[in-house]
Length: 164
Image 1: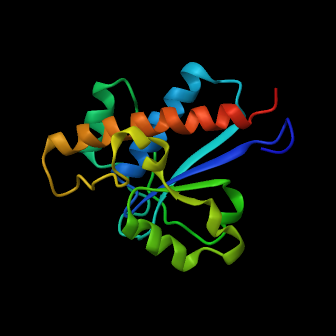
Image 2: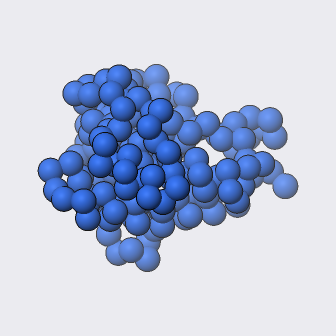
C-alpha cells in the first residue's frame, strides 16, 4: 500500500466464480464495511474457468450468505484474466488447483501476489477451502466459516500495512 490515496486491490478466485470466491467477496466486503471502512480497497472475485460467466452466485451460496446477513445476489461470475494480476495487489485462491490454473496466466513479475486465502487463517490448520458445489448445504456453511476466519486475518494484515 504505497500512497495514502491509493486503493489496494483484493481479488478472490475459485474455479467457476459462483460459490467460494463470490462468498469470499461478500464476506470481506461486509467485514471491511463494519470494522475498517476507512481502508481504500477494491474488492472483486473471478474464476479460473469460464463455465458460468455472467451468472449470479449459486443459489445455495446466496442462501447461506443471506442467513449471515450477506447479500451476494448482485455479483456476476467472470473469468480471471492476465490483466487482473496487474490490477490487484492480492490474488487469493481457494485451493491448489486454482493456484495452478492462475499461475498459467500470471505474468512472471506478478506471481508473488498469488496466495491461498487460508494462509491468512493459520489456526485452522488447513490451506484449502473445499468446493461445496457437488455437496450438501453444510458445505456452504463450512465455506462461510473458513472465509470469515481468513478475512479477519487478511484485514489484520491490510490494517498493519495501512498508512497511519
